[in-house]
Image (cartoon, rainbow, N blue to C red; front, side, top):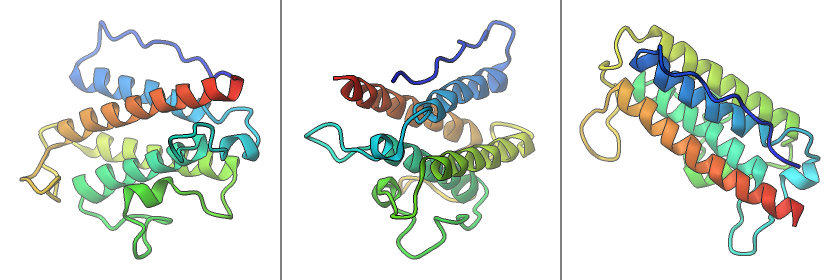
Length: 170
């Protein structure tokens, strides 16, 4: 089953913020579409022998990444549930599925995280707004850096999702 196709956004009339947000939303759509029509058995299957990546696990991880960068780093807020428990602020742990996870639950988690991120960006008067929490052990980054980082992170994982979908069809 192929991920849902997304329309390539027309970026010609866009200013920087619109162009970056549209590009991130394009990859968010690909990410959410990767679970479309999949049973839990397929969404949670380890399809490639050299990795324990799963389609559902990647979408779960990207939910965590949205909250970590926009809520945790940019705004300096505590992470929302389910990332608010000890040890939950770990990118590898975020990729591991919980016994209670479902396709619908992971899609809801991702949709909610993306909406929180959109609200954070809408509240930024400038992409130059400095993040309240330093990143990668360096000085502060700004909203622009976080937005570009999330495009890169989401696009990279969209490629992983493509490979996993190819493995489903093999």
